[in-house]
Image: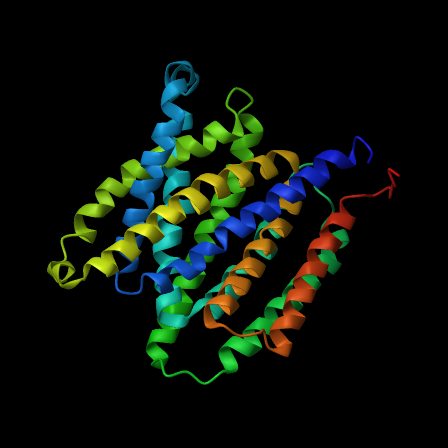
Amino acid sequence: MSGHNHPLALGIGFGAAAGAAWGFVFLAPELARDFSPLQLSAARYLAYGLVAWALIAPRWRTLAPRLGRPEWMALVRLSLLGNIVYYVLLANAVQLGGVAMTSLVIGFLPVAVTLIGSQGHGAVPLRRLALTLALGVAGIACVAWQALGMPSAAPAAHRLTGFLCALGALAAWTAYAVSNSRWLVRLDHVSSHDWSLLTGLVTGGLALLLAVPAFMDSSLSDHTGAQWGRFIGVAAGMAVVASVLGNAFWNRASRLLPLTMIGQMILFETLFALLYGFLWEARWPTALEALAMVLVSASVLAGISAHQPVPEHGN
């Protein structure tokens, strides 16, 4: 493999790993349906903050002096957008509208991030991304047809509210992905892993504020020990798998890939979210869902191709 292609392949691998880790968060609200999205988000990010602090504490004395007010303000904004606001909205969307509908809306992230990234200096021209965007939209359209056309026992108002929550989550994460990628380019004095852990630390602090209203609910005393055990397990699992590992993989990918290509990597999250949903429901994908996964995969490959103006073969 050529020297130019090695960072590309490594970046794609980290992007896929992040998608596999993040896909789990779509299933978590179903696994902990006895608890509200606010409670699930607060518990997840409290656990994330504790894990992040344990990992970063040994290096704190050398790391802290490298951070000024702009970095801390950016961490607060990124923590709110990419973690707390995003996940409260996403969890509401899953519980009101289902995993498939939420995956569908969040599946538009690659299109949104790629369109914004195409305005950046040195980005691949938008016309060369036409095929990957078209394939991505076609795949999402298949999922939409399947998800929105199926009969549902949920009231129309619930499904509409869930859809609006999913749109809000889409907007929050698009803003996070673009801003975080740009900060990582500027931060040559902080590793991507440390930046991820710092984000976790700040998110944990914000989650402390969120926990007060989240756990003041008197109905919590009605939950059984088994329900609490599952809730704690799901929250801790999300903290380690999605927040710590997923964010670390994503930051590595963000440093290795251009912003327009990072947009394509988010498609892996949609694929894994759908896969976990099928496993949870113990069924095979329908023909439309299978076609959507093929189209989404083709979109990623087309995005990779668009960033290789001179095809090379290392072997």
